[in-house]
Length: 320
Image (cartoon, rainbow, N blue to C red; front, side):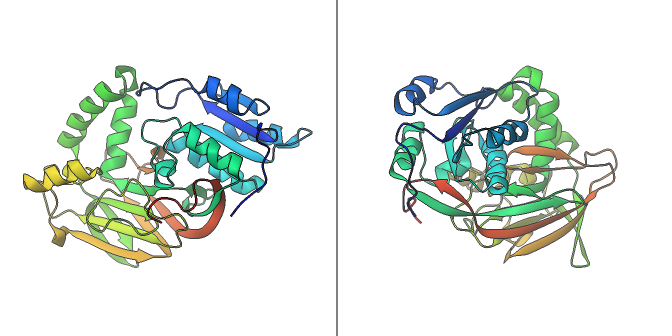
């Protein structure tokens, strides 16, 4: 689809998350924004500042922005996608985080590629998942929702954030591996002990367990991977290898989970009752963002929503 846009960026709000991608060395895009989008409204998200408040204030201004833009990682892009849906605006998403799984899946590997698509008015309608924990409001998910080993690893890493992402991550992995225990899930009245559950937006690579990056643009289904707790702790953490090379290495050395331990299915809706072991955090992760729940567990509901948000991207995205 093609939208009419102003080549100077007039009518575009770009919010930068200064904390995104702090573990990655990359050039500052300020000069690119100034040169290519001089009329765009720029806002750098301050510490403690709420993205929803920034967007709400902008949409109440005169003139209000026609397009919502974000420079950040998957968490920032996911939050802005949610607001783009709420305010019925197209989304300009630019990679500025550590991994940028969502934009890369759409073929947006750089700020310049994103701006090229914006200037051309080139868009795709992207499917999402809506995730609801207990009775909270639904959250927009662009890549994946997960419970089990991965969220516990992220929770351990965030408690060691003062060590930095990479050192803190290494320490967190060692601690999480030592403390890891299966958790209990209940689905459709069936109880299971599992290491992890990954709920991907759209159909994903059948060989993966940790489906961190979506594979489809207009996704109308949820691709679910349940790692049943019939293997070792080492296999549980080896299953979190989400890159092709790292997963291949784990398979080559015999650490990757057995196919018989992985349950795979595709649905439009999913409801899980999640019960962690006593002393373990009651948490889940969506698009890299950790969500904490009350001790004792929670109910997680996910539903696929096709063509939910319009995103500027090359058309068609590579491989789509």
